[in-house]
Length: 326
Image (tube, rainbow, N blue to C red; front, side):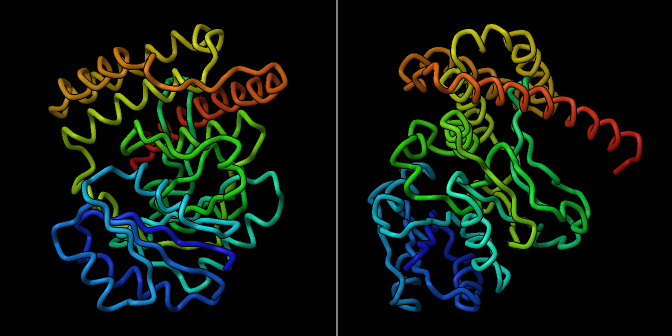
């Protein structure tokens, strides 16, 4: 097989049927499916085993989170490529074919992000890949925009792990997803790490995925998600930025944290955000930093340029949305 599709699952039995049914209709056939279940209690494991006996299921004894679940799947797979796919998705019949074509364009491509479309509003984009800014904000590119946008192949900062393909061999060089993250921002973290090593993350507009969104967490914002994301954001910057880069970016990063804190105070999650940031600062030294190597200096400079460019493009996009009312 050329591709292993890894589907992490936690109490997502009601999503599994449409997701798995869409994968059976793929034009590309050289793949296998591996479901890694995080100790679901809703009959997910039994459903897959009974209705899809050809699919391998790894049933974990407790909920280890997204990062560890997909890492277990990646270690189990023996294919050149792995696709991470959320359970609350359905795939266009040409999805796999287009993803494989995209990643095989160059051996320097680590990951490819698909064009994710909102399941219940198919006229709108859910994600066209992720960007990252000087303020420490991850930007879901294209969210809420008309689906007619983002038609070109493009380089992005990182792939959205909800429906992305990864080159297996690169994981052996840069490491797997950070299990300390548990969930949230782990995809930007691993994409950042790949860029430090000189690899590229791309976007494929012809690989279409329909996504419910927050299918496992249940909502866009909740205490668990806000706190974990805030903590992981501290980890992300601390681990991937050398000391000098952290100093250079200190002011915009501080500004980013303060603005986000004000936003979460406004919607009732200020305490959760603050506790997450404080936990991240307190435990940051327990995280494994990417060792700085002088031979990657050019990559660090290129990344800093991307952070600057993405910051200005985000501000421009925000102004356009506010002034146009879209």
